[in-house]
Length: 303
Image 1 (tube, helix red, strand yellow):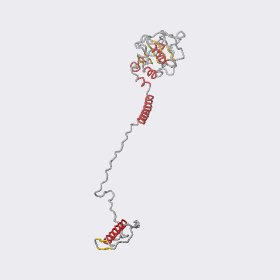
Image 2 (cartoon, rainbow, N blue to C red):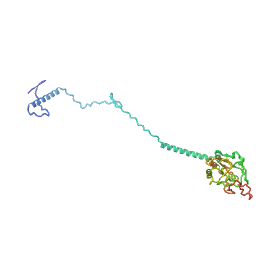
Image 3 (spheres, rainbow, N blue to C red):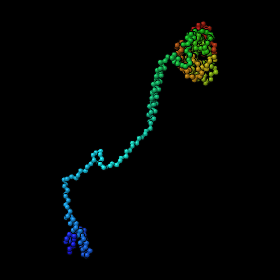
Image 4 (cartoon, helix red, strand yellow):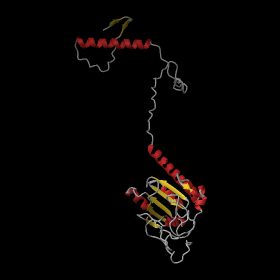
């Protein structure tokens, strides 16, 4: 059997189609075989007419792919924009702890240095310098030297222009001044002799409030070369006397009282080293002097 094709007569192919089922007879199977044969012949014709492809040279390497130099992007290429992330700034609070510590240490150091310097300065001052610094103090050693030089021991009552006096002729017997607090007036003539020995005599008006009297008494009790008594004729509530010095104040809490005592107790003495306890010492109150030893022929020129 021959089939007409566009290029002439060709013999039907007897090549079995891969995967085809063997013919079992019948017209439908015959027609299917003819179609398969024609398709195979057409494919063979196309293959014979197609030009042969050159064989690849196994030694020839594949073309090198060009890459962009480091740091440069190839022309035409785009890199996705990178969003810059701003650094997060962490605000730290002020560390007050160390600051407070260093400040405290600095203040303490300055305080210690200042206190040491103050002590050196204070220790370098004479008692006269310390007395001169007391506001309101009267130094009769500078203003009335003749008064200060009056220091004779005499019997009987004496007259004084100053109330209370800070110097002048006085009784040979002194008032005991071993921290004695007298609640009644005492003889000025005996008190002045105590000043000559270096005592500080605190006087106050009789109507001074009791709490202030007690404040003064606490400064006197138990302190040698100190004595205290009321004095009716003075012009201020409180007056302090040392030989040649006087300070008048209005209140027992006045800080100058302690300054006066510290500067002048024993330092203002005209008879350094003479005590307030032995000899013909007077412990009685009353404004009339007691002439102990006069009847025994004393001269009145004792200590």
